Image (cartoon, rainbow, N blue to C red):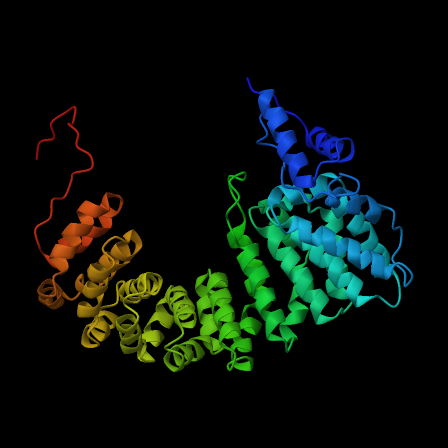
Amino acid sequence: MAKVISQETFDDAVRENVIEFEMSVEEAKEETIKQFQAQGVNLANIIVDLKVNTSTGRPVILEKIEELKNIKEVTEGNKKEFLEIIQIISEECSKTLPHRVLAAKNGANDTLLGLLKKILEAEPRDQEILQMIVANLGIMSEKQPDIFTHDYLDAAQRLLDIGSDDSVIRECLRWLQKVCILHEMNRQMIVDEDTIKYLKTFLTSKSGIIIRELCSVFRNLVLDDDIRVEFGKAHEHARVIAESCLADLTKLLYDFKSERDVVSDLILTVATLTVRNEYCLLVEDAGGLKFTLGAMSEHADSLKLVREGLKLIKALAGNDTVKVKIIQQGAAPLITTLLSTHRANESLARHALAAIAMLTLRVKENSLAFFEAGAPEVIVDCMKIHEKSKFVQRSGSHSIRNMVSRNKDQCNAFISQGAEDILNLALKEHPSIAYDVKSALRDLGVAVQLNEEWTGKAEKTISN
């Protein structure tokens, strides 16, 4: 069994080589690594590339954390020193996750929280100091959200409530984004502590940057990515946010119509929060559908905006009433044209095909609209181009099945484009989606081998 040592032991050995043997930092590290490896020590848990102070031989990040702890309060007299210390800590923590773990283990985040609370209680509040502290807390929370507790959330809520500068609010929103990733308990804590009411106030912001960061927080709150939790509350969180903010988010589309990136983020956020039947109607009533179709037509060259628009259309099509309105407003030729234009892009093709599948599901008239727009040729062509993409093949299969299931006269059009061949190829290349592909082949009326999932024999013969 390999031997292990602590980070402190490794750092002490490096310092000894620097101080006692007057080695350079690089030589000291190299010699230390050789010494421990010769002793059979496993250094997998050691940060061997810490920046070292050439005078003292100690890791710079640890020295700066100690200096930070000695600052009980930030004043005009020590502001410059504080900013220099926190800048170095920020640079070191930005390097790797082990650097951030080491900083948190040595109390950097708790020290910053203490200073943050003191500044929040003071008047006036130095916005530059606030920004640097919150930015550093965000950096240290990246990929280690466990350090976020109720005390940190209280400070974040206070920041959002007191009306700080946009730069501070931006860093606070980014901090909240990071602590939501891969941590269901943090997401639940943020929602349960009524943080949404503080976030909602920024929907009136005129800053596109603030709106984009806010949208990102909302989307991260409805993630379901924490494998440590058997059942998350993503849907419940989406409901809470949607009932409070969905209408306002939709109306913001018109306020930022000239800013592509803001519009893209808003559309994606609206799509993410539209998780219920009634929310589809709410978005449509607020003008979300009309705006999205117009934006997709006007900015047809923007892959990001078109992709997010397709996601929203698919989400809105979950409501049968809105599904009809989508086609009535000319979505079929628009989506077909966009898919044809960007057919080489796998991501956009996948979402466009998924939207077609959703819009044509159980609605004969919608299927006819796509057929008249020339969708069969484009759908099959996309499946041929992206034959290695399981997602494109599955969505394409769904589109074909839904279009022909209630319009059998469309079958020949798909078959003439080579749908049968590409579906059979998908059946071989992607066995995990065999059910979806066979459903399309079945409804096309071509040869397909269907497996009987279960057979059994009755214990008693039933006579007629």
